[in-house]
Image (cartoon, rainbow, N blue to C red):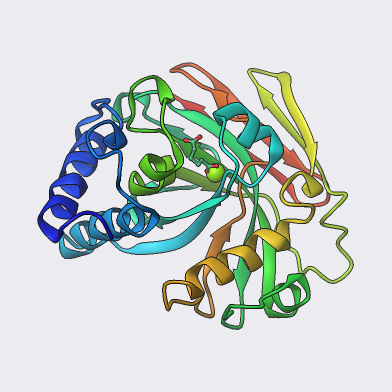
Length: 262
Ligand code: 0L1
Ligand code: MG
């Protein structure tokens, strides 16, 4: 690690305040260009601890930047992971306040709920499918705390991978009999189709994203517990939303998820 504990705590406060006050800030690598991957995840973990100390519950995990469309859009080459909060969870059909965010964007995702824990290294698609209770469609509302959504990978990891809100809905389905790779996804904004994709857009198979999460967590001595809710990453590029927009994401065989931005 290149940063001391004091600096990590200060950067956690800097980024969490930006989130809670909806104020965009400059990316932290401008000031700390030598910070490393361990520093980035340590800042994310310090933000998580700040929230937990105030009573926030961590209700899931997320992978981000798992599709080529997203990686190309953001100019980065590797997936990242973060955590989901209880206050970020929205019901199907929710009204989501844009006044609580800086510059929200939406991503259509396939979420997994596990019935068994997963431990890397060596976790693979087969282990994930065997450990999965059900999958469900979801939409992530991301909101980078960085000005103009401009960042590098270390800055975005520290910023809890832009996590803001997430909406689950549709139908829960067991994975047996589901062709997750060929699952069609259609994203509509204000009644118009704005993006389409198939499950394979996420690392070739959405379960590969969960396996990668288990393997990445293992590098830090962590694992995915039974019962975990995991968002696997946007299947398409992220789409900007503003107050007044209505969004519906339809996932083949899994129903739809809708929300309105106010
Ligand atoms: O969930 C995601 O794929 C987002 C990861 C962070 C990058 C971004 O803000 O677009
Ligand atoms: Mg996402």
